[in-house]
Image (cartoon, rainbow, N blue to C red; front, side):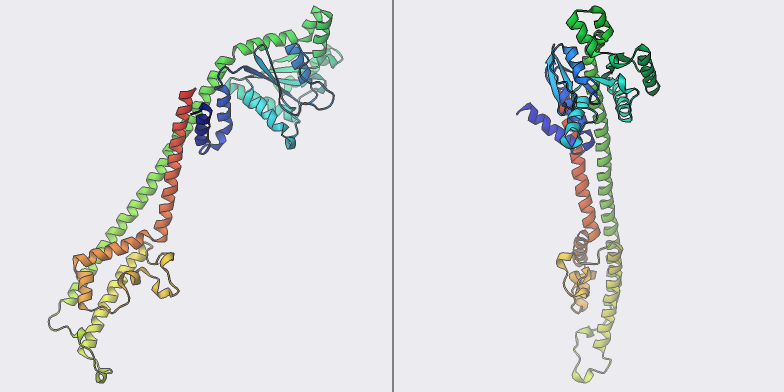
Length: 420
């Protein structure tokens, strides 16, 4: 199996539960690249001298320098085994995708960022200040390095003007070391072999600072990878525990509901069985089976009295059982079994029917163990089909899927760690 496919599946499993970590996973993929070159990204606003600075650093006119906006995509070049990236400016066009290129260059690809600000612009604007703070915060967290470059200092009137600009920026970003450079002076120094002009350009000092920063990249990469993996591991472990707790709680709720229903149903069936047995345990013939004649239709016969007595006992039994079903939300039939006759759409009718019950029927249903067991099975089945129980079952299914997804993500992260 291709290692990239395996990694992609692992990343997908993690992102499915931690979507906010998609960038971190992409960064880890970049860090895990075998033999990956160190990457230096130049970032700043358009026309602040970024492309020309890169050309001076690598000693070749590789990056396009223009008065109009040119860097609208991610431009790169390899020099001395270092990959140099010229990101679209901070004022990149989001609609054309430039902003995405800039984000990739600064936050995903780079090991070292060169933050470039043109001295002629004076103090930093709001967007530069925001990026500057974000880079400093990122450096404290991940140890990725940023060098802060004050470019085009040759365009200032004199050193006093330069000091004024530096003081203004110092007020905005205290304790920040800026490297003042002039690409123009450096090119003039190179072309004219003028050592003093080269030194005054600030480029040699910037190259020295870059060399020191590049030497720290391997340790910074290792720290960042360990940091990101550790954060995600802790987050996933916590998420797994939380989701399994939710699942366990729902299952406990399901079990407790069932236990309470079973206990209440057993109690009411036992009570009804005892009450019914007392009604049925009467001496003498069973007059309920004696049919009435036409002449008896307006008379109170022994048959009518007995049938009324049995009906009252049956109604009381139904009321008591119905109260338990209502208490547990199991009175109504499931939607699939409902009819157009509302009075028939009840669990009591579905289980006990609508026929007249005689002594033998009541004895079989309520007084014999087999009958009570059958009633318990039927009522329990409808209890499990009730709306609340079905909704709880759906919640349990979703919670189980969520817990399994978190477990899978944690295992996927372990695979990423093992794979390097």
